[in-house]
Image 1 (cartoon, rainbow, N blue to C red):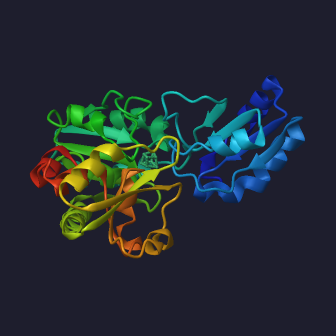
Image 2 (image 1 turned 180 degrees about the horizontal axis):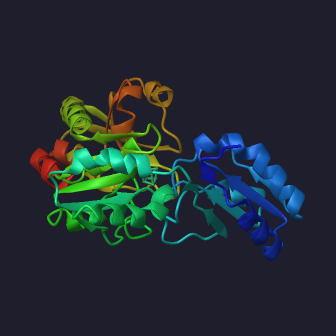
Image 3 (image 1 turned 135 degrees about the vertical axis):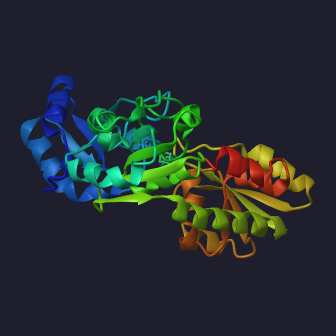
Length: 332
Ligand code: SF4
């Protein structure tokens, strides 16, 4: 059993019993699918519910298994690991956020030397660490610093909460703070570093280290520049429309028309989960704009042989936005 996370088994048992659920679909993030047998046994032994596990990938609250749930005719979708993301969902979903129980005391001590020159710190975290925000705020206030937790905005569900695809809550306070501290993992802190110009520090609870993000940010910015230049030079472009319910970032109609007006051949392609193999099959298309999760183009850059850019980056390639706008206002 994974002792790092709180799976709230008894909360789910109560929900299943109170709702008199007959059949539920259980959705777990990739790293927690190893808990599936234990959880299903626990729920089935303590309720009258039958539980089916979704074997499809699950990367975020954007990635609800609604089609599977409807196809199976279940009464309830249990979605583990993320806060609600989509504004409207036409299905019963029970979101179970998982607290990371690892103490951050040691990491906070380690971070003092990194943050000593900053007087005002913006503080955010991924959903697993929401319960550690106040402790962290007090820790730095006791050291004489001002700590600001930004109000929720965009897809953030709580004040101080960040998801990987937009950082509008950080942008709100970026001029009021000297640096941001992100509790969580590299995914969220890199996103922050690509969104605001402040120094970004990660309290990395997975590797027990404090990391300043500018080196990785600079490397990724160079990759993004090269990807945009590469797309500009291609005659044939594929626009990938994501089929996951919450992953709709940008209009294919807008981009298609703009590229066609620039004399390019364009096709629009649907994909539920992108992969290198799927793109290779479109053998005469060397560059794609993806309108699914914007982190696929950024994070999975090295996994793909072909060029992939985000909606915003496509606007730069077409001349509707300047490269400097991305640097100034953020890639996400
Ligand atoms: S970063 Fe991507 S996977 Fe995560 S919530 Fe946003 S769209 Fe979903």
